[in-house]
Amino acid sequence: MTSSQNGGASPRLITPDNSALILIDHQPQMAFATRSIDGQTLVNNVTGLAKSAKVFGVPTILTTVASETFSGPIFPQVQAVFPNQRPIDRTTMNAWEDKNFVAAVRKIGRKKLVVAALWTEVCLGTMVLSAIDDGYEAYIVSDASGGVTLEAHERAIERMIQAGAEPMTWIQVLLEWQRDWARTNTYEAVMNVAKEHGGAYGIGIGYAKVMFGAHEGEEKKAA
Image (cartoon, rainbow, N blue to C red; front, top):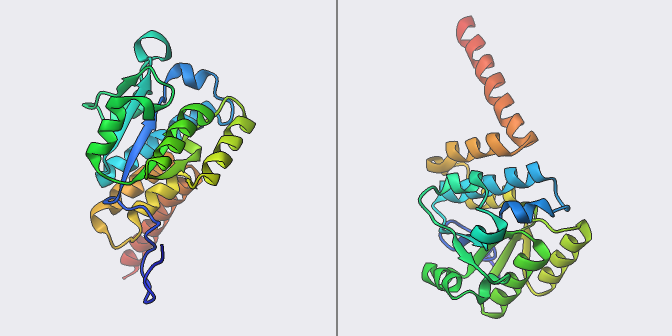
């Protein structure tokens, strides 16, 4: 895949029109044993990722495993982003072995799948490897996923990369969907997501707005 000789975006990049978001098993029981990422950071990141998809109208699939008998409901922060969407509940660890899940992916009709899951080495890895072998492109959001150990997480990421998956972070996903600050219809919403969930990046946005606003105010007074 190559971009035009006259410039332009690579077809490798995700856009709001060519990608779908899949969030797998962000549930309490799965989070209890996650050790590759701090729990509060994990919730923040996956919520930021979910809000990013909402801003751009990116089709999103929520799925859980044994939510009523073992793992509990999807994180309430994520469910709140899509209040009317019922997660697809499964018995299979590999979502690609669940017919309802696969049917939902096929219905969307997009080949670029942005995926985050708990745990990285099980529910993310098995689904991503299966989807790639089925002709899909996988973009794995590593900082909205987590494994039972750091090594388990990292080895799973390596395995998926070797199979052709592309690793990303949630802020990278947000900004790749935005791509151009001249896209004013999503600019403010993107800034709000970044301020709410982007850590130091978000603090910087708030700081710049306050300081530049104050500076402009002083200029007007002087005039």
